[in-house]
Length: 353
Ligand code: PMP
Image 1 (cartoon, helix red, strand yellow):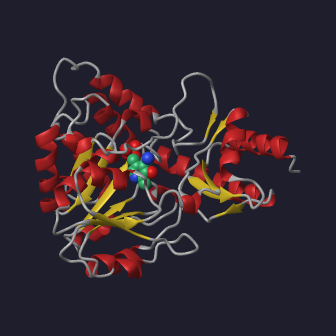
Image 2 (cartoon, helix red, strand yellow):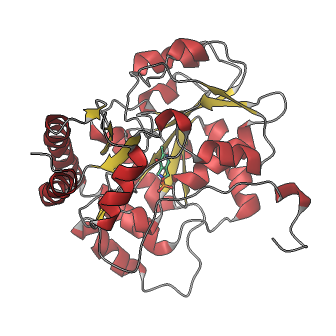
């Protein structure tokens, strides 16, 4: 730390992203990316966008928002785009939390939530997951706080239904409820239609997972026109050109080829079934997942050891040191070939048949 670093941030513990190793090729199952390339239509649109690169990008992402609006049956005024959904989530912490509206989220969830809260000097409360690592929606009724829930939750992969979320929305009319749907396209039911009924709902989604665009960085928020206007006040005070032209064009191209995304999600869901069964057959305990990853532990093998040994053998998975989940690893559902390689490595290392 330099002696110039602001007092405000001296105790900040930054988010630690999953490894993106550049030294060698791993079977990369640690950051829930799609194993499939972006849609050919996305690449076509991005190549078109390369031509006017001397000009700034459109700060309103007009075409992208229009295409998103058509895809979701909502208005363009209900949408804000961001540099990954991380950026939209940070905007939401900034816009909707203050001393009267502290933040609340589960104790086991996306690790960026407490970081965003601390970065912005926001008080927060963590509500423990149930013993089976599920979220009990009853614990968010009448919370009096700004609620952040990942649905499906990460890293557990467990899903709440729109009816359960509606219970939270209806009993927190004075508070914003942010539903982070980063993984909703892998079998969950989205809460987007509920924005018409609940002006306190902000749904956040991403192009990083189901839409094969993690490296392009594109996310979006969907909510009432008023909520979106607030987020835009924050965005225009930080970086109006937060989405670059290539990324916006990739996004449009991807949305215009929905069959491609749908087919890839179907493949991942099919592979998830096979993956879960295969791990269980080898003695792992695996939570039922509605995401493109599974959360698994072995009763006889330490979670840290699973991570380390697999890495030595060329397979990357994600381990969290947090006490309650340190026995587990979060493993991305990849292609059938990647799953075979992982299973092969597990059998070799621990001599499981
Ligand atoms: N929410 C959750 C629950 C996530 O796991 C992630 C991925 N790390 C994100 C949001 C952020 O994704 P991105 O910024 O790539 O859109």
